[in-house]
Amino acid sequence: MASDLGVNLSELMRSEEARKRIQLDKYIGDGVGRPTLEDIFRELEKPGRDPREKLVPMEFAAGINSIGDLKEGMRVPGVVTNVTNFGAFVDIGVHQDGLVHVSELADRFIKDPNEVVKVQQRVEVVVLKVEENRKRISLSMKR
Image (tube, rainbow, N blue to C red; front, side, top):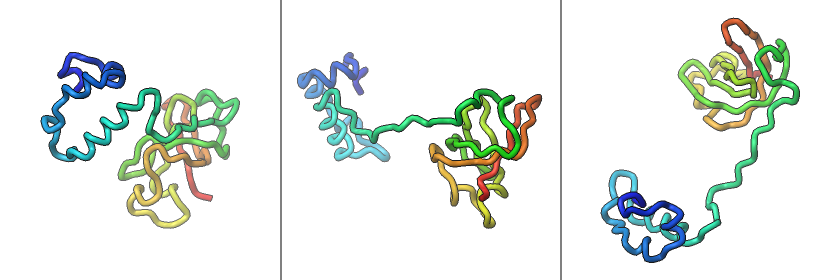
């Protein structure tokens, strides 16, 4: 949108004149209606204000920086990075995501991992197995 007018986003935020040149109807389509575009424009009028929720940085376990620092049985915090039919991948701060197999997501039967986890969800996991040479980490969310 901004590039269509030959301006960048920061100029749009500062310049009411630049915002007036944009024809919103041109950008209405599947999933984006005029009310959404008008909401965006109202937010652009408030430079320096970020309408998103505050992001609290993830704090991984202290002293665990590489796959070699992991030991079976450790309980560590993590964040879900991907959900698949067979489980969820979790970032635990060692530059290699671990896998929580669907059978390890909960203490009950889970048919669909999306019932239990979602991307960006913060979780606590237990390290089940570490295969450093294959760069594989098996995790569990069972209590």
